[in-house]
Length: 198
Ligand code: OGA
Ligand code: MN
View 1: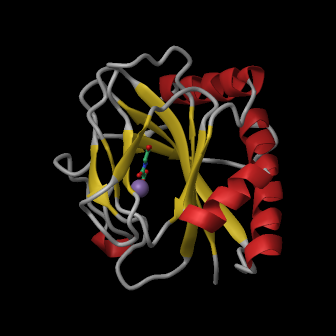
View 2 (view 1 turned 90 degrees about the vertical axis):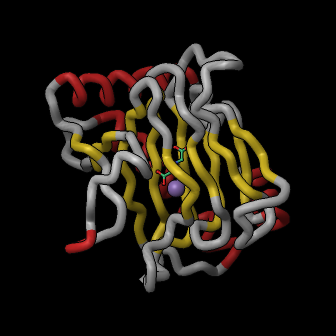
């Protein structure tokens, strides 16, 4: 966890391969797939509240918000880990993060998400983004990389490409870093979420 916190401190973003072990990742992935097969996902929207719209030219994923009911064992286990991360972030950076909201996301073949920031216009509640990837045999050439521009506030210039490999966790400051999901050449699963302040 210290490596992650140090990178966040220095760069404002961090990649942590193997953050979640293989067993935990596979069980979480299975819970995601079961829910999909039960038809629990819905098309992801853009914007919020009354402005929420499905716009396929902006993002092509479908999502399911994480749930805390006791039956969702793997989601609860992951949320418990994020709770430790929340406390560590508060202790280190005095961010006053009070909650985490997150969803599974499934990108079908050809799915992408155009460049964006993770803060809704006029809001400041999302402070730190945390994304966990759930793709066990991701190979170079499978697409679906997260492209993150590393200059704060910039949608051009230097960037990193992060492969959505099983167990990799990526964190960044939600309001500072432009990012996009490049077209996936096969189904791509993840959990995206945000630590929030009041
Ligand atoms: C998002 C997002 C990136 C990814 O859901 O807001 O930017 O790599 N996801 O899944
Ligand atoms: Mn995003």
